[in-house]
Image 1: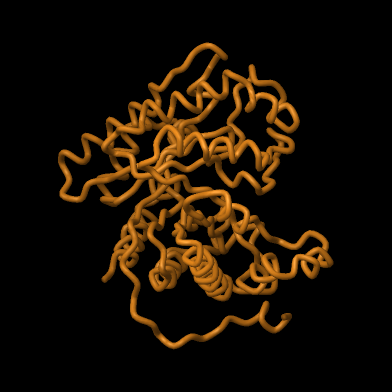
Image 2 (image 1 turned 90 degrees about the vertical axis):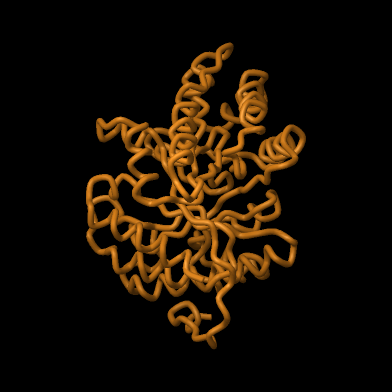
Length: 345
């Protein structure tokens, strides 16, 4: 097992699977933090990359500023930008809408102040209340008939602990997630629900998580997310893949190239498991920028990742890193190149 953890594997070249739909994630908070205009930034990104898909958040705290009011103006503005882009582009863009208390981008848990402490058990109490359920159901009903909608993402990494200075225990309970998935199916049976997670060091650790959890428990805090739980809970498994940064596995003892190979093997492992259950695997966050101020992750690493993931049988690949792209033309060019690699037939 130790040898497998430290070494990648070599496979005979296989025929390329069908090209995935490709795109990126965008939050208006990204532009707000940089004191830029969100609508204009999204317009710029769409024009530069011509994506098949864009993932957009419908934040609970923004959408439900008080227990008795709903405000969809933020997401409506972004959808209008996408709709206008489609009128002018030969490649139409669809959207994945992310809903729930957990949503992508810091601080991960986007709960309004009126909902109480931003941690469990208060979070669970708030999510079981009438106000939260109004936000959740009203969102689905409002956008289920949109011609732009491709799918729903329900919560973001709901089983993975990502507590920080702004939140405490922000895990979503399995029963709450089951209710939310059930509501998507009840109110909008036409669009699938994807649930996201990150995986372990590599496919060996992932295999152990599924088949020998006792071995991993002996490692005392092994680095693994909950892809098996996400797969079982959802219509589609969404994987978040980062190969450089403080949470990267065995950071001081491995190279970016090796960790990239590990992730490719893990994607293959989970894609095969999902296929066995007649489900798809989507790559919802593929690292496409350096981690914060680090310079170790380069555009060449992004292109290598894109080439590796193009070999895997996934339906969707979304890059993560638009804040860097908007500031740096070199990274914008690398992102465009990576999307082209992923589209290659």
